[in-house]
Length: 205
Image (cartoon, rainbow, N blue to C red; front, side):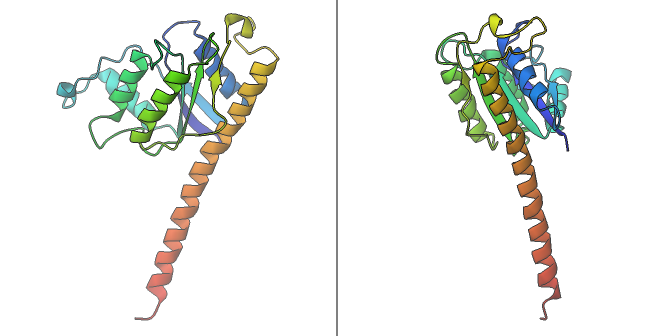
C-alpha cells in the first residue's frame, strides 16, 4: 500500500537543499510513499478575521493536507529558528480552532543545513508545534543533517553515494515504517473495539 505523504518544505528557494533532500527521501521509498510537494509560498499570512471567508490558497492547502496519510516537514533553519513561511503554513493548517488538518497525522521532521548543527533549533521548534497539533512524530532516528551543500547532489538533484545518502536512506525507511505502524495500529484498535462491542451485544442480560 502506498501512503499519501504531504511534503512541506520550509524554503522557497528554487534549488533549495531541503527540497532536494525531501525528494531523495521519497525517491528511496517510492514503493510505498506517494509524495506530493505542498507549496506554501503563496499562502496569505494567517489572520483570524478571514476564518469566515478563507482565501482560496488556504482552502487548497488545507484540502491537500487533509487528504494525506502523513506529513513530512523538511526545513532549513533561519536565525536559530523555524522559517516564517513554514510557521505561517502550520498556523493556516491548524485553524480554525478545533478544525486542524494536521490532527493525528503521523509525521517526521528533517532539517538540513550547510552548517554543522543541521538546523537543530528549527527542528525542535517544529517538533514543539507538532505536539500541540496532536501529531505522532517519529522520534528516531533524529534528522539533523549537517554539512549539506550543492556538492552533495548530482546534476539531477539526487544525492551522491556516501554517508549522507546512507543516512537519508535510513530516514526514508524509518519514516515509511513509522507511517505504516501508526495506521496499522489504529486499524487494529478499531477492529478490537468493534469486536468488543459485538461481544457485549451477544452477552445475555
